[in-house]
Image (spheres, rainbow, N blue to C red):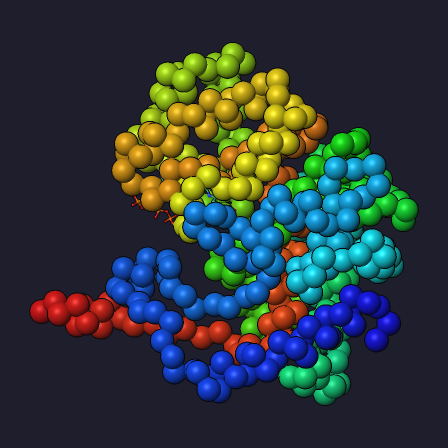
Length: 436
Ligand code: HAX
């Protein structure tokens, strides 16, 4: 085994396996909770039926990556020289191993990504052949699944070389290759779709975030925006649609390419990752009606109520688990206060932040009236010139892949089985409820 990340990961896996085995063998019958009819019909909300050690989402505190809050994560990880933000590669090391890497560890992972980052030409040709109005998320998903033919996992599986002990290694190989290629794939989609196909080649001297900014054709400090964005969006424990989809598909031993392509498809829904696009679309609508003037709080209240009264959701607000302002929102808000305090769109978001929670509370439907990650993220992208908001969820997807790939590697390492919850019929639920 040649690289230090893989060696460290193997150590961690060997340490971890007996814990999982013991829980299943000796304590498999111990109850974790109960499930009621509301949860069965209501999207399994709150049902504890997944396990991950990569991140944990506390409803009041928000996300912790491997036990670290967002500010701790940003503070502890080695920084890219001359930048405010850490290496994404170092963050991936943390997600996989649970340890803060040294500068040398990070450089090794960055080298590994660099070696694997080239996207094959056939993927570009396929993307060029798609209709011009294809959504960037559909293009990303298609680009990923097109590379499935290269899966090391599939080759090894077909050769009969895989068993429960070593499956994670082939998964790791696929995972690293796919992650290394995603910035190239995403930036290619952007330049193909919005910049007349004027493609910018990668710079092998740059880290993942730096290279992404370079290939997008956006100047500093967009490299830091990219790093922050990928880290913030990486993982939100395992029950959200994208992470759960990736895990579910992988549980059938579908390879990483199939799993992450499916993950992207789940992220593309407006109630999930596409909300960042929807926030910008909504704000642009308000801006159009205000003719660019910043709305007063009363004016903004009217826009919010109009949307609610027409039966639509306010994008960027609410959450299935969180019950306070999303710390990912706060991290981006702090970035805005530092780098773009006078930006017009930021001022819009600020007024929206003030008026929306009390309105949602007054309406009395949303369990969480506070803003989520998507309420703020488009503003930063727009400020740095990325105004094609259909593309925003692709950025989320590149980030989310870091967490989901880490989870899938661990799924294989710990031998988690194929997922298969049980369904009931409506009549059975009526019976359970005692309805005659
Ligand atoms: N605006 C208006 N109504 C909202 C609302 C919002 N932002 N958030 C929740 N509600 C409504 C729900 O639609 C639901 O209404 P019905 O009873 O009529 O069906 C009611 O309040 C109860 O919903 P909930 O239990 O509070 O929320 P859910 O767990 O069902 O759904 C969602 C969570 C995030 C999907 C929801 O809050 C929402 O639609 N938000 C707007 C879209 C959004 O920002 N999504 C991104 C979330 C973060 C994320 O995953 N990013 O990728």
